Length: 272
Image (cartoon, rainbow, N blue to C red):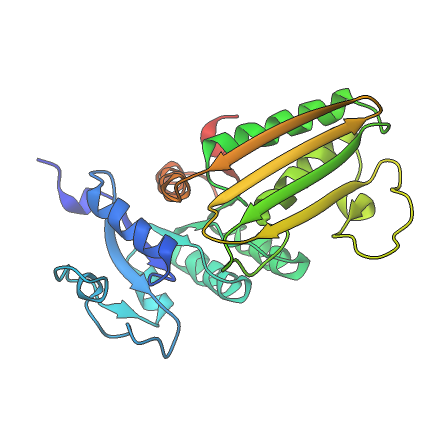
């Protein structure tokens, strides 16, 4: 029989959220990982409660805490789908604990990424705008198609998500935009067209456009459109179950064990 202490211990941050609760259930059902901590923001009404009870089930012996350092100290991995400010804090603390930090947080800006990159000098960080296999394959395809077509092909990225999503465009859309820009050999910030409104003038050749749709309970839909005179190519991914992201995050946390410190992404995890 496997000694439970030989199984890596994971902490889930933002544990009361939809993704947090899904990760808790996934880890509980896994024979390759065990839950050793649950973190929520200070003032949340789950703080100090048994996690299983807070989730509406049986007690599981994990007390929800707002002290991430204490939780991370006994963990081999931290899985984090929270907010940019929280993720930056968690990156530094996970690095202190030498725990693998899996980041699914979106909306990260340049200053956040710089601090995460600094933390990756001391620990493994796996960051991706999307944790699913399908989206990461789509990213590869986008890069290849963009490299094969010239600037006469306009590139537009259209994404749709549920009404509660707070950032736009989505992290996945930006990841796809980066892939398109890399395929063309340009920097995305220099060629990015944000959402359009009013009299915008004609579209600039070579730019990469973004559009965001919010409504209902849409899990996630992403189209990469390559449009030229007389023809279009559309690459599409549709997510119907958030479990694909949780499974990808768990896979990443397991993959990161015993890796050298550094910043990785899901292409590394999936061997793509």
